[in-house]
Picture 1 (tube, helix red, strand yellow):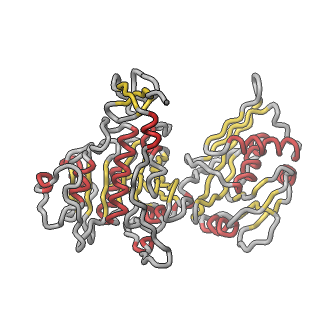
Picture 2: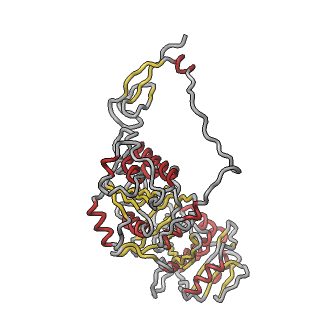
Length: 472
């Protein structure tokens, strides 16, 4: 006969543990584990009775292509990153460092989405006057934007699903916990719901403080269920630290449909919007904005914004072109090779993969007979961009060689090419598109792999990395 089994159950979150702990490992509460005895035989023989899940046949069901019904924000850079606009019923997570401009960009998105329908803006961080003053400063807003000063998830969802003829200010008394007002107005459904931020809201289903890991997950799941059921897109704002180490937004990436990050490029006060997950589009697109007093301003032609413009001739500086999504960007690669003073030679890289830099240095040393074993090599991508494009291999090798030999590369020359372990220079994707962008910006020469291409630039075709060294 099996003996009764003793377990410890948390009185706050019902988490179970076989041994007693002073603190619950799930919700973090202290002194909440209580000992209980469970009949092992009874629990083993008990079989739950549940209704079977609904089965839907692919051939018999009618579906709607919500991707074709995207909500245009009329902000070209935002629509580009989202894949063409906001998909109805999608859950979007917008993350970024505090103070980077997340509330500013969602205000502009809300203003664009509120042209023909209602947009709800729920904030647990700021009052109505604070949010209204921001909208006035950005010249956004209107009668279709409704503000909800609430942190309870159930009350927010009930307010969004309330009939449109209920006056603002009378919604809260009608809400009675979970399951208050259940149906939305079918004639004029909301176009968008914005939650600022996910760390400040809480759901009554989880007994923990707002901002906790379990509370954030449960709140996000509640908004996900509402978005899928009512086909209302939801934007969740999530804060992260400068190193992205906070657990909240990171734990939501598998729940939401789209994850977009707002990054800063401090030198020129630009903001970069990029997608790291998108179920309805590509994750390779970038949105470039300039931060102004009137909000975010789109950069229509960002090809040369990361290109340092100077007339000074400096060795170790090479200009190249990268492709982010469908858009070419011209970037400047700077390298510095100095003699090692003490210990092993140092390898440092900013904006470029350090492991790739180590490989290219080894290729230069072995194939091009350039001795870098006693040289510190420091590499920098001007403008703060983080690049992972094989087309930068040849520019990096050229920049290192230029710095080591103290030879200047003309700033009218663009360099493109991938370098293999044998020192061979290989072709890169969309080469003609990169060369056309350089031609538009006034470049006259190009160093490219040994292939046939149509361009008006004066080209120098390279088969092997040794050919670059011989030219110096």
